[in-house]
Image (cartoon, rainbow, N blue to C red; front, top):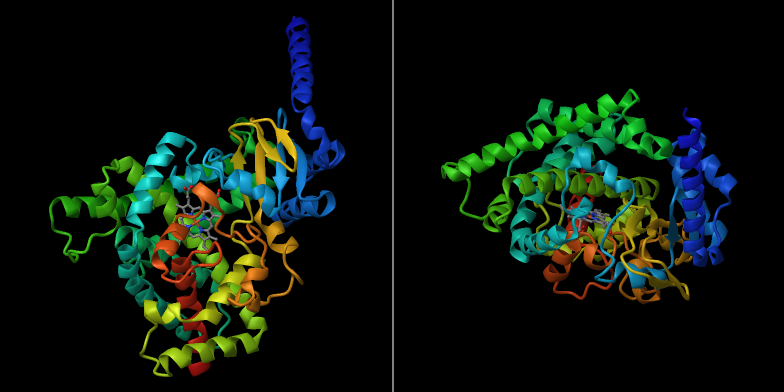
Amino acid sequence: MFVIPFTLLLFITILYYFYQVNKYKVLDDYPGPTPLELIKFMLLPKSTTDTYEFFVSLSKKYGPVVKIWIKPFRPSLLVSDGKFVKNILLSKEHVNKTGYFGLLRTFVGDGLPLMSDISLWRQERKTFSHVFNNQFIIDYISTFKTHAIKLSEAINENLNKPVDLQVLILRHGLNIVYDLLLNEDISKQDDRVNRYMKSLRTFFGVYYDRINSPLKMIDSIFKLTENYKIWTNTSIESKKFIESTLKQVIELKKNNTSGKSDRKDFVDLLLESNLSYDRILENIRTLAVAGSDTVSASSGFALYELAKKPELQEKIYQEYISILGTDKNVCAEFRDIQQMTFTECVIKESLRLYPPVPFIFRALFNSTEIGGKIVPGDIDIIFSIIDSHYSNFDDPAEFKPERFLPENASNIPANAYFPFSLGPRDCIGKIVAIKLSNRNFYLATSSEIIQCIQSMIIKLIYVVKLF
Ligand code: HEM
């Protein structure tokens, strides 16, 4: 009874497969892993490190453009060379995202970094570029300062005791971003924030499990697994966490009873831009994660390198006291942090060696030229930021902040360093940075994010040295 439909289906699938193989024939010239390598990658159990190393090894083995067939009927090219990065990332046309990030939507909401509705994304990108303006960021530097003091107090409490610095820093990053987005200080709300942080960690555990076993990326298969319940519950918890504050904030604004200063905050600016409540909620949910997790990861890695190199700690400390002296009650202001050139190089080098977003994805919109060949429009491109950060630098595994000193920065090839991505869909912080910075920012980095991380590191070193 089933034989005829089954044979028909098999026949159609085979026909379609050959049609696709023929359609993408031009990609045959690009090297890439064998079907056996791919099947092993898809089916064998592995850790996140294995997945990460698999992708990193591909560029090493096959060069700057690698063909990969992970999706059954749609190939991807893994690209790691600045000159290929240019025609796609810098183009106004190829702004559509694809890939692993889409899975995050359940937990982090459908905000700017994940949006696939391109006309809506264009509108909202304009709104957010307007909102993240100079004055807004300068006003909020005082927020960073207050939180840096709180972090140093938390560290002082734990001095000479073993402490999970990453948890402390993530909590600190979340406090800052929450304050920045919702004008709410959550540093005292331990239970609520701990629940959210626990959900965040649990959700990401499941997310990486899905990425490591590509079959679980198919929703209908994933729904049959135990983790589906965890995935749903943690996502509900995260939405509740942001929504409870947002509702209250908007209600107080409507009744004009917020008791806050007249300064316009982030929500005021979004409301003025006529963003609906749902869109504000989705974006704040996303930004809370996009802002805190990345910043905490990069500061964690910078601290890890600094912990191994007392001579770098000393240089940062000397730079700090040359600007601010040794009075522990004095805290760095925006203008002070801008003068801390060496500290900034440490952050940049940490973002090179450990980019918090090592891979980014684009779905090609139209056929385009990559490595001298015209490739069809309906393929995916994976950009390996991490590989570009290694292959374009001497002694790539060495932590050398001096590479980013203004006199050395001209040795870095164009588009080779892009921790915040490049082009129209790059990190929104970078736009702010370019406007903010009266210096000519010589690399694609975001100064206000760097300054936020700096404020934490400076505080940490300051604490370690003075106490
Ligand atoms: C060290 C810290 C950070 C790093 C390394 C980082 C990195 C990135 C990268 C690589 C992208 C682009 C992804 C792509 O091209 O597909 C991105 C996008 C984005 N980032 Fe960041 N980010 C950081 C911090 C932040 C912060 C603090 C915020 C805001 C509070 C933020 C908001 C965004 C937004 C809204 C986008 C999406 C832009 C769009 O799609 O139009 N990021 N970030």
